[in-house]
Length: 304
Image (tube, rainbow, N blue to C red; front, top):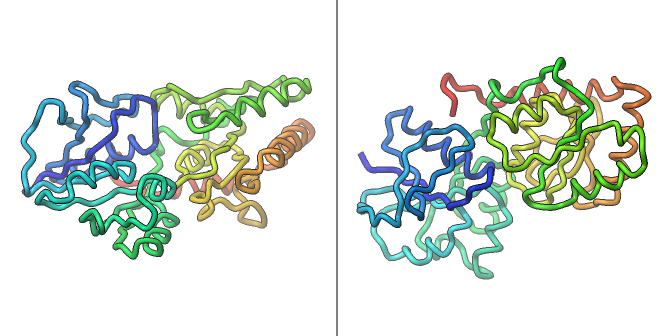
């Protein structure tokens, strides 16, 4: 049986993409495949997410066989270019659509680098790559772990959570609104960073609101996790989240703001918090729709 080698950046901070790579390897091994994570620096591994996948380090000069199947994240274009003449099969796993044009040369396609198949979790990425590169793309369903991401009404408090790894809009809006006094100063404003997944999920379960401020996302999994945890999600779709984020009508599951419009997001966030101060159940139907969506993603018998 050929090995399946998932090449993974040596990136220590919590990241949805890193978690996906480790989860895929663990799930493949559960299914009987010989799958492994490949890191560069000897001894490095990402452990914050709880997926205990085996690791091989390139720094240790391991033997790579021509029968191995390489899975390369879309950001590893240089490695794909350097290894285009090597025997064996390579596929790309595309976790965002933005790096596809940030790292490739204008007009360059993965087929030019000897890669003819792509994996992705996002329908937006699938459609984009099929259009832009005319390449075969397989869609792998997302999974939201119900053991971590679920609604806990007893834990909910006046907390607004946000992620700061890709932009600083969350702290900016938090400081702006806190200067206005109550009801904003009555809230805890929590930047979710440098957390293991257990603590990250706990903060989502504790939070009343989740502020999403990034503008270039693939599946936008953090939004799904927040929805499953019973948060009222406010912010941008990041493009990729547009396939499931609904901002109006009977199926509304979030407070959706025009992608990238930070002034509008600030004003909307202020209005929503003021509404909640007067009517705590004002958005109960929105949260209910969100919880149903987040909880509805595939639930295999084993954690994947």
